[in-house]
Length: 265
Image (cartoon, rainbow, N blue to C red):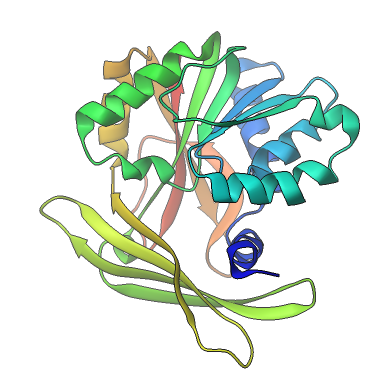
């Protein structure tokens, strides 16, 4: 397998739990809207594995996938799209487009996952993106932004964890390489270590502004959303998140926390 494909295989095995994420997004939508969402738009979709899991959830589930990078889109088409049934493939549309694009049909739910929207460092640009998302949502649509924070996100730090995919063992390495508290901006990276090989340093690199939850909610309001809420992930006994989210307005800080900030149209 060429390295241009291997890095996505390793990323998905260590970072994503696409089937679980699709279930969580649908569950949280139903909690707020008391009905089942059907049309999902995945922004910064990459290999759009999440959207493929979405259309598997029901014969009326549809997905629109947006990304400007042709490489992960090509991987997704080769690996994930081809694994779907013919009927499921008919219900997924993949676009090499900027997330600023307006799309039809209007989505019940738009999600920007894996903190990809942190690429927008300027508040005006972030609000512009939120406005575009607002216009592409149905009248009762919801806009999901995952958010991460905690002390490990704002100081040089390294985490390692071992995984296995297709019989191959590897080590996932996440680093906060540097952080500038004046601008709330950081450089982060994902590296991999496979057996009998040198470390594959910075297979993925990120130059982000770490937007806080209050900032995101203010920007959503400025973009036209009538309200917002925060779903906070609970803690697992052995550490990390447990995949269960609750609405909250107050939590304690920790080494790392995960939440969804939801714009309510």
